[in-house]
Length: 204
View (cartoon, rainbow, N blue to C red):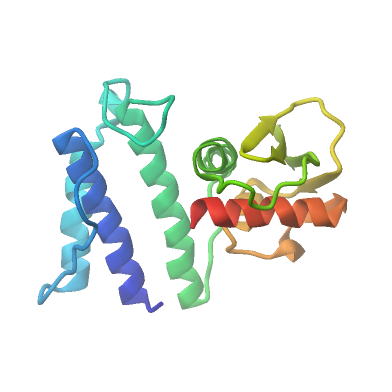
């Protein structure tokens, strides 16, 4: 994928979400090529429309989403913050100068991956072992266990493994942007890799 491809991908996601909010449901299709337009101008126009649609002051208002437990505009504010942040890292990686994600944003990104993506998109039978894994960053931790079609969120359980690091590194590891060398893994490495594989399957 080139940087232009990345720009078109993120810009298309932004336009899809803007249309989703405006029409009150999932819009058909996701193809929004810039055509003859300058890709940067095309991207800027799309992100300006998205920002106008996702006013944080209206975060509590009802909105159509794909999350069973959050039907508010705030869902999209959060989702687009993480979508854009992860792809910002992709763009910076292409330029050879990645800046860490802001710690609070990254910690919330970990929570989003584990609860939203695994909770809604885990493929049946994929990478399940039932062994609990704790992810730990300064000030927060999550313990999850994957079973057939079920994700257990089990704080206080005795985990088979612990993954720890900075919020940015753990979040980017979950998204496959950094490898295990950027986090600390203690315990059952197989359980950790099963969790990472399940996240990869859930996030596509």
